[in-house]
Amino acid sequence: MLAHLTSWESVVTHFLPERLAGGIRPETLSVIAADEDAWNAQQVASRERLTPKEQLDEFEQTRQALFQVLSHVGEEALNRQHPWPEWEGTLATYMLEEIGGHEREHRKAVLAAAERR
Image (cartoon, rainbow, N blue to C red):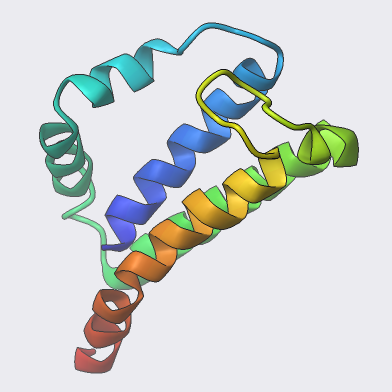
């Protein structure tokens, strides 16, 4: 589950500056959209060799990179309404609903895995 979450946050970290600058949909998102399940499976498989600690460390590094991007874009960008065509709300709302919601969706699985360790 950590590999899955890390992959998605990494995608957001990389596409966010381009999206905010009015760029077109990045190629990565097109690849994901073509077969999201296959992309997810590939991302998880690419991290199977990592220990749980290494996966947690990678997740933390990815989260810090995302925070850096958000810090760099600044408060004005966070509060901008409709920052790209597919999103009606603010960037801040996107982060809370989409990123936070994604984590909440998988929270029980992550906690269950942690308890088994």
